[in-house]
Image 1: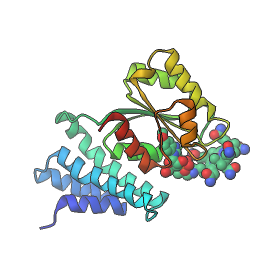
Image 2: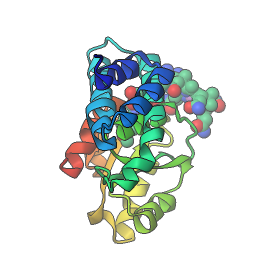
Image 3: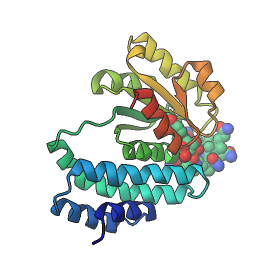
Length: 212
Ligand code: B1M
């Protein structure tokens, strides 16, 4: 008999969204629990997708369709996970910084973080330091994930960290940054807690930052 979780994992890696939806439904009908499908199916598959991306075997398009298939499965599981009181690994407020409208990389980061078990508050693009501060204060984000694609908007990462400090919440939140012009040296310079060069490593970094 086919193992549904194997098929779900393969479906995600192939980006076959409809297969994933069908098999998630079937696995639930057969009595597999939502947390098991999440952990052994969706999250494991996305970890493997991340590994293949880091090894240069998958590229952005493969990652995007895998993430789309993962999200389709997650949408079915979400209500059941709420019923089962499954807590996310952490809550991440993610956005592209003020003045910057590039969102493809940021969306990919959000998808990989979601695939790693995080709850995402997607603040979108052109996000001001005040909006990031508000996400910590009113939405309880434990991680701020900032993306910038323009050298001219990178300083808004530093401005956001300054705003977090000024509003007294810097110690309650981890700050991670990334985007094509961003480097580890820049993260060190502005006092961010971490930098990741791509979406897969962003998921690994976020888990390290929250001690998961
Ligand atoms: Co613009 N753009 N763009 N652009 N654009 C760049 C970034 C540019 C390098 C092109 C160039 O000149 N060669 C250049 C920036 C130059 C610079 O600052 N040094 C540039 C420019 C100048 C501009 C405009 C100013 C152009 C103009 O109007 N004169 C303008 C600015 C608008 C604004 O933001 N205010 C502009 C506009 C646009 C479009 C709207 C047309 C479009 C964006 C569409 C969209 O995002 N919805 C666009 C695009 C598509 C690009 C390029 C071609 C591609 C960017 C992209 O999506 N890459 C880009 C050139 C290039 O990069 N080759 C360019 C794919 C994506 C998956 O990669 O975002 O790097 P990336 O994300 C990676 C990693 O960086 C990392 O993970 C991702 C995947 O693994 N990552 C993180 C990203 N965020 C992370 C966060 C993390 C960790 C990792 O932790 C939190």
